[in-house]
Structure formats: C-alpha cells, structure tokens
Length: 72
Image (cartoon, rainbow, N blue to C red; front, top):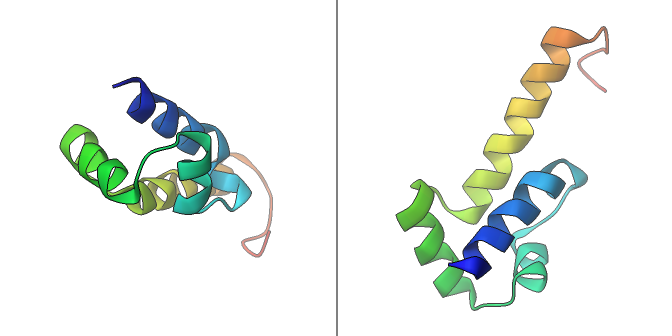
C-alpha cells in the first residue's frame, strides 16, 4: 500500500521532530482507523508506538555515540 509506505517513511524521517499521528495523517491522507489497522498488520505496532520506537532508538544512539548529557 503506497499510502502506508508514505506514512511509515514520514514517521521514519520525522519521528524525532516531535510529530504526532495527526501529522502522519496529513502527510499520508487516510483515516486514522485505516492507518492504525494497516500499521498493526504490517509492522505489529500502532503509528504512535512506531514514533516512540524510533525516538527511543535515536536517544540510545546519541547516548552511545556522543558526549551529550542526558538532558539534551
């Protein structure tokens, strides 16, 4: 599904910019229900969970690879 691919690409590219599911829906227009269903079927997570997963992965990477303090 091209719309789901666009939504997941938007999440991957912008998750660390403070996006919400509403932002995802603006980037890849579909109903929230359709997006949630398609995401769960494709990746086993909701769009919100995917945003959080990417944010946590980036935080882990920054902690491991930089000297930035935790607060940053």
